[in-house]
Image (tube, rainbow, N blue to C red; front, side, top):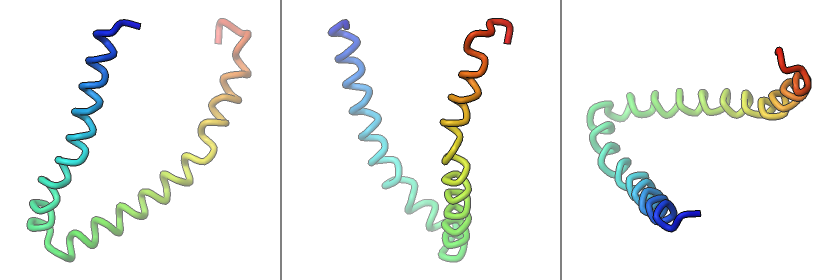
Length: 78
């Protein structure tokens, strides 16, 4: 492994972590001021419903994809 790529990767990872902390601190006051209390409540409610659907959808996707991929492992045409 190259030292340069490791250093660049570490710097980019630190930048990503910093932006993950900084971005909500900047956007949340603006969004809450624009949407008001009722709009923010509607957004949070719909976000919770979507997250439940994502949780249910993600339960079996990985195992299903591995099983279906294993069916065609030896057949190069498919």
